[in-house]
Structure formats: structure tokens, C-alpha cells
Length: 162
Image (cartoon, helix red, strand yellow):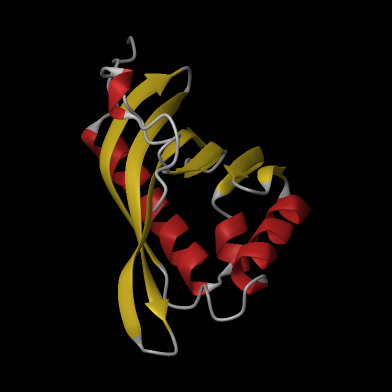
């Protein structure tokens, strides 16, 4: 039986749950939970640290983002949405948007912190669980926000006030 070009509904839901587990682990300081979401040899590319492959590199990344700036990570919430999925070999390529709400602890106030997108390759492990083989997180700035239309919508230089 030939594989279809589209993931099944069950695969889509399982992969969306993988992203939800990623958000919960990342946003609550669950180091082992985070590491367990990656396949053997899997990697994450997160700026400014870059590509981190393997548990030790990922632990270093997590400790830098969680503890590098005191009081800046507690209460963050990644909100994934607009999943686009297509088969790629034995895996599924996923593109999804995310936003991050952030808790300002001194004021006990939340605000929208940043926008971005993920580009991931998800694969099944030996037990049939979906894992990340590749995960690239892109933070959106004027230079990095995706755009396929006329490039004249991008500012060529920073404005004096921004």
C-alpha cells in the first residue's frame, strides 16, 4: 500500500501533541521532559545559541535561556498554531507559527513578548512515538519574518525611532 502525501488525522493530532509537550516542557523548566522529545541524533536550532545536537548541548541551551537572565523565563507561554504538515521520507515536515506571552514578575503582568515560527522534521521512534529529528525556531524581526510577496514591504533600514 502506497503512502499518502498527507499525514493521517491521527498522525496530525499526535504531532500537534508533540508540540504541546514541547511547549509544556520548555515553559515549565522540565529538562528531562524536553530532552525526551527528541529522536536519537535529533537537534534544535535556537538563536542565538545556534544548532544544539544531543543532550549535553540541549541542556546548555536550556540553562542559558532559563537561567541566563534572572526572572525572564518563569511564566512564559509558547502558543503554537497554524500547523502545515507534509510527508518527507518516513517523517513529517511541520511548519507552525508561535507566539510567546511573558510574565513580568515585578508587576505580575503578562504581555505579548515575541512572534516566530518553527520548521520541524518529526519522526517515529522504535516504540512508535513521534519525536523531533530537527527543530528550527525562528524569532521574527523585520529581517526574518516570512514574506513571499513584493519585498518593498520591508524597511531597508531602521527608522530613527525604532
